[in-house]
Image (tube, rainbow, N blue to C red; front, side, top):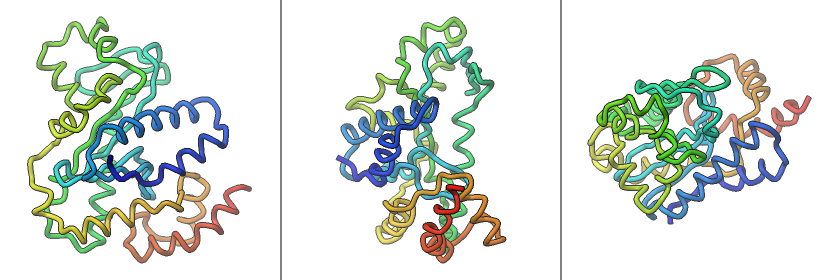
Length: 250
């Protein structure tokens, strides 16, 4: 079983009786988290809602074989999706989305964050990959859609390499994740164990939750500095958080 960080924060949010799309989103993330718990190896660390400031990834998995893997969860029903495009864009009832492209923002922020550890000389981008998971959609429902039936086998395989469905959340999950890696660089040759542990401890703090837009707004206005920050400012955020969480209620 992998190491899971910040799960209790997700459970607390669900216990707070969220409504509508917010509840649906958290429900989907909990389903995916359960699949990670049951199917990923002990070498993996799974962080729900890692402590980023500018963006809000659903999950970050860190593993010696996988490297860094961002997971974007879309708990959409089949009827919510109007059209899949082989380039990764998805037309939904609320407009056009590109969830895999969305993860590029997470990759860029993680790269900037890692530079704060003075890791400039490391080829960090080649250790980061990303996937999208649809926990409410099975592969057959996707494959039988009229637009997907027009794709070639190669186009479908390319799409499915980084887009997972409910029936992918099984005992073969880790192997599929390995096949989704963007690059083949050896993670263990780039980062020391101490560096990895420092990264995990900084991104996976159990008691810090920065999801309120008001918290972001008040924090950034107060500090009057770019959102990207080093470890000194991460500590500053933790010390200021109770104050800003109080004012975010008003």
